[in-house]
Length: 199
Image 1 (spheres, helix red, strand yellow):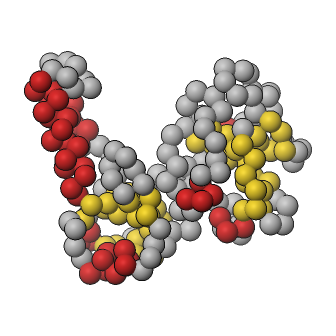
Image 2: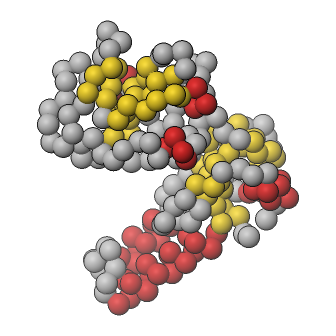
Image 3: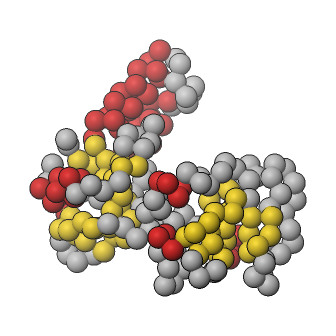
């Protein structure tokens, strides 16, 4: 493991639990060529390697999740040719990420509002209301200009901010959403890179 990653992990950065890929650590990273990656998840190699080996064994036994004659190929494709990755040796510097939502705040967000969608509102210290939503990922979220997650004072679950600025409810389950609810105006999850390291 590179010293800079080890130093960052020892700095007391909050870990991010993940039952599939193992515990991660969120950060921003500068590459050696000056490229800035605002959202990076640092993860140990061993959990993902063990998961791949389990998937291969399941496919050999016919109990795999792919259940097709191309199961082996699908596993290789999933683990080798998908996702955004950055090499640890290309990283020059890491620092805390402003888009990493703190776990205590994340735990206040309740489950799905509708199938594959969770809508909620963050209320800020100054009374500002901002619609948020995600279809799956919760590791990193966009922020309105001039705000950080430390400014959030309340989470309004299954809600949105109407075009007139009013906090409004979203229907849970299969109900229809209000006509003025536009997901294009919602702050969303951010894409990120994964950097694997050996412990």
